[in-house]
Image 1 (cartoon, rainbow, N blue to C red):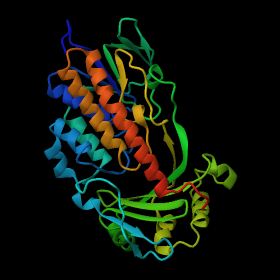
Image 2 (image 1 turned 180 degrees about the vertical axis):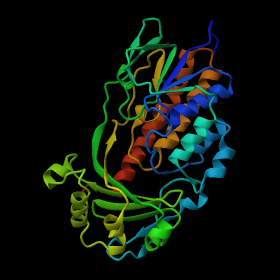
Image 3 (image 1 turned 45 degrees about the horizontal axis):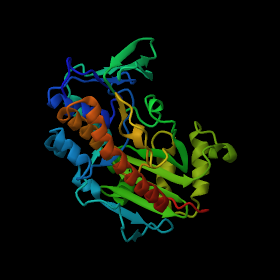
Image 4 (image 1 turned 180 degrees about the horizontal axis):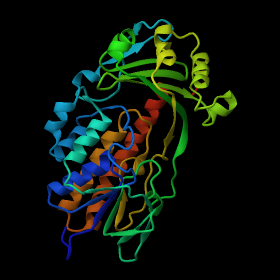
Length: 369
């Protein structure tokens, strides 16, 4: 990339994809700024465990020269899957996720921390909330921040997730509710405080399904088991059910009624969980989600291809980020680089979105329970 001045590359969003892109750019001596609305790296919990696939997430970590450090944190034993009959809690044959056999688990927060620690100090500017992007007419862009300030860039990378403030500059698409809701809860110090449930879950993920309902329990690091109860329902299911989402007892009673007939060993987590319940409706972007190329701006990760949470989102976001960075350091101009990147990412994400939609339907069939 040749320019009279160092290109001003601004990545909006310090998620896995944006950080992976920044890391590869810095490895090649390129300047980059990451704007993040959160006030610090520890401002909120980062979510559960991720299985990092060889051909996507691991390929990105190799490009970022972080693969060996990733391996020291990853949990290969976390790949274990157990499928139980919901009525009896007896083991069923495991069909498992359809990907390679080398996909070790790592907590999302650990992976994000690994990427953050690899960046030059000051790369991420915390507490910077971008509200929109305006073209300046010469292929450059002006970012608008909620404090009234602005930031100009030769390339804006929207890595700001499902509800991206950058996406409207490229696409009219908005996330839609998939028809599936996940309710999250969990158990702390599970091996000591909940040993029977911990043994049932094992080292990886436990799954039980019946009709359009499922329970997934996923072992994380530090003795935590993260649990998701999933079902098909209208987005405002709690209104018709008369449930107050901030009333733990109300949510618990509804879920126990919904899962009536399931084995008590599986329902244990609904009765003895730590903390409350978190309502997580699943949103997706239209698939395929494409746009006409616009100079000086592009998207990656969930901002570009929001999919059901069935194991590909984080992997693809990191691969998006490293592919974009690689193009930026090898092509002769920003515009050429973005075109090359989009020619890779858009068809890849379209295919992945189709597979993720099918996986969600397989997990939570679109029929009455």
